[in-house]
Length: 372
Length: 251
Ligand SMILES: Nc1ncnc2c1ncn2[C@@H]1O[C@H](COP(=O)(O)OP(=O)(O)O)[C@@H](O)[C@H]1O
Ligand SMILES: [Mg+2]
Image (cartoon, rainbow over the protein chains, first blue to last red):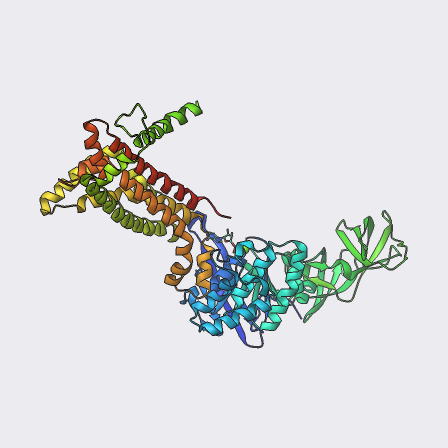
């Protein structure tokens, strides 16, 4: 697999398709380009995540899908048909809002029933569905509670149940876990995966937490400054970041310079500043031979005791012990900082001490050439 | 100083209320407790007529002013904000700033012209005047309430298939109701207590309770007026307390 910015090769039925979406707020000097020519296709039953730093346009994209904003240019298709003319209340899409927005004048059960009532479902069916939903989010005991008497985690569950009850085609979740503490967040991550699996509903999940995105998603779109920088499975995004921003935003990364001397489809050969050559993965867009930047993940490199062996040589500046593994901070002979992460073995005494010289080897073609 | 102010503020009211229960006519010497003056006021046909008229006007003014203020509140907080908004706020709140006597004279002149042109007379003018000066009082708590209310509730309702009307009925209205009730009650007491505008705008025979009381006072202080004032005071205190309870933030 090679990294790509557009995903034309989507198989399975399509739930949502955004085509060349641009959204501009304000005008003149105050103009904000919240989304800039964004195209993305989201499959049915997919757990799809929009990942990016605050202000990159994630919420705006959700609001366009829900119908609270209208695109400046481009269109959105839902199951293949354009929905641009539909007001929010006619779109078979539900949202879990960032602050939950539970109706304060209704009980838990009334909140969950609201969507079904608005759809005009018969009372018996509504009561049935509400019961199912309470069961699904494990809130049966609190059905008659006022929402102001719920904890953050419980409010979260009610918001989920309320949005799932009308069985939308797509569920939009805007940073639903960001208000929860770490332990509860981990619990809800598992809970969300379970709910998505049990309901089979397409989830579009927004987060700025890269770890959350990697652990929960079927696919991730990495966004920055109103643009989608890369779309792929968590593995693709992590192992084959297409550009510096993506590599930097997700996980810990080493950047090194080199020269691309040959390219053959998705792999190539790069000569490093040390003179050594390594095989490397290439991005989908063609990269011309010449100077390139490379990404090497810290766990894809190893140290050699022979300080002249390996593809790089350098000096160890710092050694940090983390229990499961140890991080070695080096500076290479050309001055580039470089980090190597090695798994710890029981009772093993590391021979790589601070201040000593070491060689660095790179596993397989773990090196990835960047577009920029 | 604070104590002095409080004494000056509430002292007269307490003295007034106290002597309204006096057995004799004296307002300086308390001779014994009795309901005499209340009974006499309640039995006075003039008082009955004036009270009825005041209540009628206050009721109509409250209903219309609160409805208008509710719509104005929705328009100024729930529609896309536009540049003229501060101007709209200023226009709605203007009557609160202009001296009441000025508004009264203006209204008198204006209504005089309309009466001459159309030849239509009647209670409608007095009611209209009350409606108009009640609107800003009804508007204040309604707008405050709407500004406190997060827009995401209405978005959530729309997201859950509520048409704009149903979203209003099921979510916006119940949530803004405390503000509406507070606005209505404020309007009610403001209309009930009004003197200056009523005095100038009222046509012949349109004697509201405060106008009747002023007429009485010209002839000297009577315990009867004292008693009526105490009742009005009671109503005002009750309503203001309710407004306070409704507008203090829950949560
Ligand atoms: N209603 C709006 N008016 C003006 N600017 C907006 C509006 N909504 C969002 N923006 C701007 O658009 C950009 C993207 O915002 P948003 O989609 O909320 O980002 P994210 O959810 O990724 O943090 C930001 O610069 C934000 O300030
Ligand atoms: Mg956001």
